[in-house]
Image 1 (tube, each protein chain N blue to C red):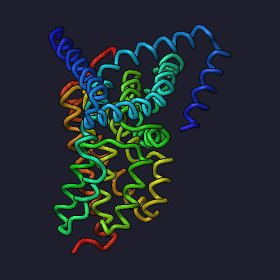
Image 2: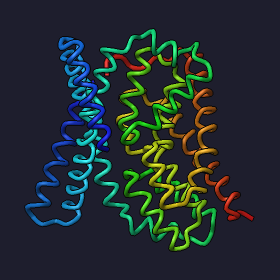
Image 3: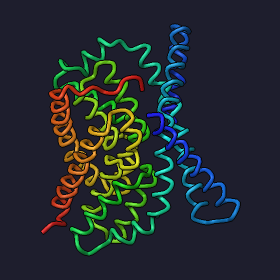
Length: 174
Length: 160
């Protein structure tokens, strides 16, 4: 474990040195990589602090019982409806959905529901779908949504059941 | 994006009003969680910066218009899986491709894999859910994207 971290840290330093050297020596590919890194970091820094503060508030204020009731093993089909609504209003992409899904699960949401949430936050985000429809046409967006949402739910249930049978446990403490 | 800021500020204000103690606890949790996952985010950013350099928009543009539909879908889902771009860049790009004659079916494969399959978000997903779940979820997502692309193709009369 410790040596794994050491490798990661050395890779990170090598990367920084490479990008820094590229800027000093005017090496174009390295500069482009550095610019990509910078612009994506900025993009994520616009979202992540808000997302994590909301996660913090969620963990402090929302009772485990509430989550269990609406998204837990007893929630039935309405659990999936809730989770799709939640996914549809999530901002960002998968990288924001993972920590939220993790928190939901640690508060008692069942596995198939959080996988549906991850899927929904990828494909049903409302602002993004509006944007998509304006470039690709409403017909395209409708077909895409109607075809993908049921598939997301079904595969999430399959994956959730399989993991529950295998007594899968999410890694604690993230 | 602005509604996220408004929502966060409102939620924080309500929380402080109801209980300053709980709010400071929430912020501490937020900071701790953020720091815990930071290495995974850095790994992702490094991957993203290198992959986007290796596969720029022009290459995607060049290969998706392939006349062979099978090749088109395969390449589209490959590019969609290995790249990561926000919707406000991806859909204008799809719009351009559409005007250039790329089929709806191929663009559906591209945009769905782009949103659902995350090879670049692998470090983050792995940190939260482990390697096995990450692999299975991404494989399922890839499969969904292909099925959705085929359905799109049928509805737009692009198959057959």
